[in-house]
Image 1 (spheres, rainbow, N blue to C red):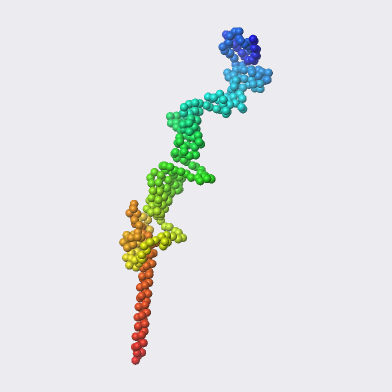
Image 2: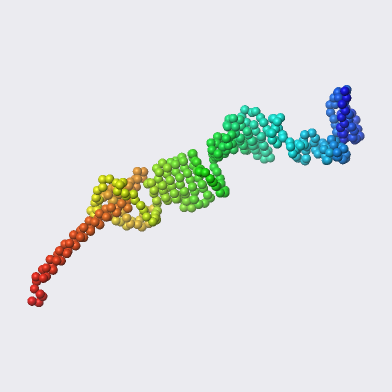
Length: 384
């Protein structure tokens, strides 16, 4: 049985012909089965003047002056033939608008499908060797860890995992096991706004330090390693503006080491100060020594050692000797503090005692005045 097919070939020279032949176009008729065996090679000589590409010459193949193979698709010549075409430095499938390319699979489902059965991951590697070599890979992991996806790479010899996405969608930067929607191990540098919207947004810090440090101005810092400290720092004046110590539950204003629940190193201005003083909260009520205690206190003028600021008041040691309940001693620093507001109680009693003395003196004065008037009435008139 003979099967005939015609192929138009430009400048066709059979490898079996040892001598150079004149350039020409010929039609080859092949027989199947071939009575003369199989041709081992086919050589095409470059042709600078190929026939025009048209519907009647579709399928024509020739080698151009740059030794590149050109193929007539019925409209124009394109470099390459078969399933692929070449245009300059570009290589593309013939049916580029619908082609799906598979690597490791015969049934690609997307424009490019890469499939592998490696034990750990399947990867696409991109390398740059122009100067300092760099290698980057996009990896699809197996079920350990979590059917994840990662980007791995860096300078040659220092490659490492950079971004990890678990099968459940958690994204990790600097960690291979993100536990939240976004888990970051390392520093974060923000040069623009950072927004929260909706829900119950929060930033969770589980260890180490967290800082917001502008080039100049106020720094915000969370230290979870040494006492769980939070503070706002004034970089201009090198001082703490606001400090919170979690282990002692103390807050300091202009104070890096608060010694009480709320410690302010400066002047406080307020419309009012309220003291918890409900009688229902108290027991064993007894009168306070008033005038006798107040008379034992010494009011003094003084200057503060840290800034030389002049002031007046009392000393805690002086008050403690008379009213120990009005003095607080810090367990850590040993410093003493006076409850100035509570001095109102002995002052009230002192005023009451003084008022009683005044009233008693007034009664004596009135009585003596009456007696004096009575004596005057008994005396003869002046001049007699």
